[in-house]
Image 1: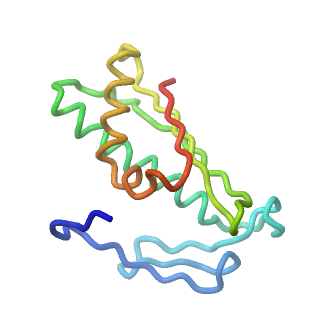
Image 2: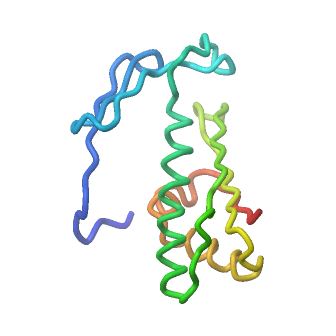
Length: 142
């Protein structure tokens, strides 16, 4: 396990009620109701769920890593750069696990450059580093 050399930022949040509860950040910027999707036996209520939050967080973080490596390579990412992320959940031998797909769109940037940047971003992204070797992560350039 690699330890942080220093702490740049710490996010703090509190969840109550599990998948049928709520989650709030300590600064009040995040305040969401949670509900369980039908696929997991829930009522598919109005709230979000941990998988959606993870999908959004991973995609946003990966774009940050992509910007970092693109900047170091002298490449300007298009304004419309975006990631369509999917986080799937299902049973594994000893409980439940997740799998991730990140489909990266970098506009008209050539595919070879885009793929190289995506591969480099996958090496520096905190979410990628946290999940590497633990879950399946599929990356594609669209």
